[in-house]
Image 1 (cartoon, rainbow, N blue to C red):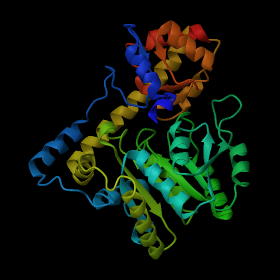
Image 2: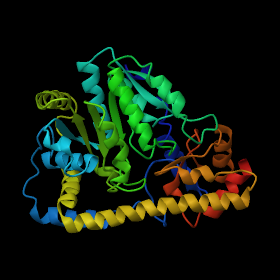
Image 3: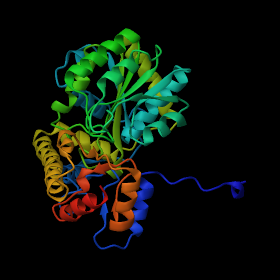
Image 4: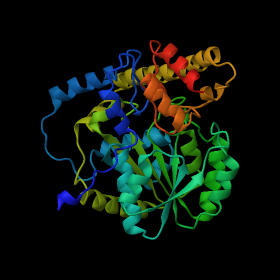
Length: 396
């Protein structure tokens, strides 16, 4: 049977990383995969994570299975991060959630829940969106549709077109929204736009599925959650997928959570039972170590303070690299205005480079970008900035 198979196409992002690893150019630059890198080009382990792991090494008494929903305390802490401690929704007991293997696992559990419990409904993604969103949703059996996002220049939001499309989406369909640091564009919704979206969702009886993969990487932990909190002021139901890969640097530990807001306490309890059923038939129960790290840090005031300082440092480095890149491009190619990049948020920027220009960067300079022109700003360093700007100027 296996002999009749043809090779599957490589992942559009991870496949480039494999090409990068085989490239022998001494000054090659990887701006593809969404992984934070420090000024030395390394993906560090945070100090708060190391301290938490030492505590776990001393205190952990068992490696037995977690329950289907994972660490309940992590689910509770995630809700507090998303909603803000003391939020009135938390007191209404109409929120439930499960720990998942990363944010991608949360997306898949949510997709399984929708596809199996509410069939014949589509999910709508921004055009563009994270390349793996359609894969995850289609694998769960959902039909994927697109709504417009970028303006004609490809550097800002076309909110009028987005809003018009939202008013035409069939009742009961799901909207995939990026909470902040939109991947791949870095172009985010403003707070008043979140309010308008919330009103449309409520009027149209749609279900928002919010991908919250970068909390703390935009403007701050609370600042990055303002859009979601505004949305939840207007909608009775929502699903929120949280990832701790970026803001804790726990990429390989696969730590995430799915939070679901229901209209009533009874409905929330019923939803949780269905989420557990979806988990049980998929991966049975989630891994413990990474979740225990996050829980330990968030519950310990000292460790949380260390984490927030380290997170602020990562956020500031990315912001600095945006500024240095725009300044470098102003020197190298003053006829091209790339100042819009400083207005974007998070790890990624939509550069406006075409697939032909991206190919030229890879073939002539050993600089790797996704074909859409998405740049991982965290891959920029003071050491590679001059060469990067020279290369980009050469292909513009």
